Image (tube, rainbow, N blue to C red):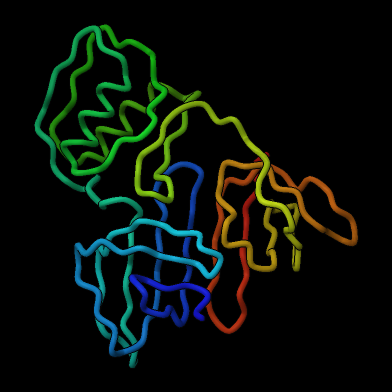
Length: 222
């Protein structure tokens, strides 16, 4: 069984990046006979059952393989939205509107701040989302594994058990772990490091590395 598949197609190598703020991204190489079309919905599934809903942004043959770049969710944030004015509405409504118009799926949006007036400029949905979230610096947003958008306060739950540090550069906040497919950003990571189980820190970014050597790299915030 392959460590990672894309719509059931074995992945030979690549990286899956999961940020605390933003969307999962994947750059993968598949067998040369594999085909995934631009705009196609793709489920990435790890061997432990952890799955991510993504969409193909670009892909094509290269050096005997099929190379694809995938984006978490429906990859709708590049869609151009028209201007829109709001008065006396919570930020959650503004974000829900722009996500829906972009073809994305809103999930839990804990953004209760009421904007007396908000003028959405015409342009990419990503810019509209960025403008709202810049007004709410205490809130974060990301695309969850099921493809829905979440926004709210971080609660920093405990991450999965059993992490083992293979290499570390703590001064850079970087740790390379034996594979932990279920690990996501936005959690507190504990693991076995230098012979002791200890708290490693708050995970800002996860990078699952697929290839001859399987690793899960993490970047820890201050």
